[in-house]
Amino acid sequence: MLNASLKEHCLDIRCDTIRAIGHLGVGHIGGCLSVIELLTVLYFEAMNIDPAQPKMPGRDRFICSKGHAGPAVYAALANRGFFPKEMLLTLNRGGTDLPSHCDMNRTPGVDMTTGSLGQGFSCAVGAALGSKLEGDGAVIYTLIGDGESQEGQIWEAAMFAAAKKLDNLIAFTDYNKLQIDDTVEKVNDIAPLAAKWHAFGWNVVEVENGNDLDAVLNAVGTALSMRGEGSPTMVILHTKKGCGVPEVEAMGAGNHNCPFSEAQAEAAIRALREAFAAETAARPGDEEDEDDGPAAGKED
Image (cartoon, rainbow, N blue to C red; front, side):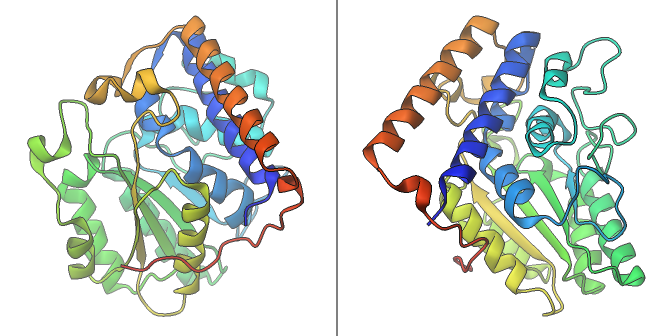
């Protein structure tokens, strides 16, 4: 069972993401909120990283190929101690080190500049190959979007990763079913997604609720257990775009990049923290739960 601290980290990352976008007044709030649970597990459980040494040799790496989820990545990095949380309120402003999309030259802890869809995934494949050649034992994690999965570059890189037996590569698809124009199904359907990755020679782990922290933790554990088998692993996370803020969830495809005020942000944060407090009070002793770390999950 999850311990209270991991749940609190997840809440803090979600709230800090909301606050940063609300302070700016506009942003990619939908696709940020759908991946908070994944970022929590990676930065607080799975990854071998050191905020005091952002360029530490042999460190695990996370490459956010869907670079517009940058604000969520920044919130995770700040909570992990890579830079002060106060910096989050400079998001996408003049002179900031936190641009809308991830930039490795400006943000401590960011391992690759991304934003042009498909390219970050190719960089992750290259990083995994480099790590294999170096023999440094690093795990390379990368996140792609479902709309991004329509890019041909994704599948060229997927084929290469399998051919080179990059079993140190663990990828995630944020399968929230929405993209900037409409639903993924209407624009250019990628289903059956698991079958496609299987056909390209990847292990596949599918998570029915990718916004369930326990389920994501288990799935990452399953993916890690497959290292040494000679194939990269794709974890398909069925998520909800805008997860945690009902008014954002209700916008559908309109929440890809939209106005979001400071007042809306503070109201959403208040509601989230009240719900968390009520849930915690209803389960006394939860703070004493042991954290088992990444464990076995569901393999497709």
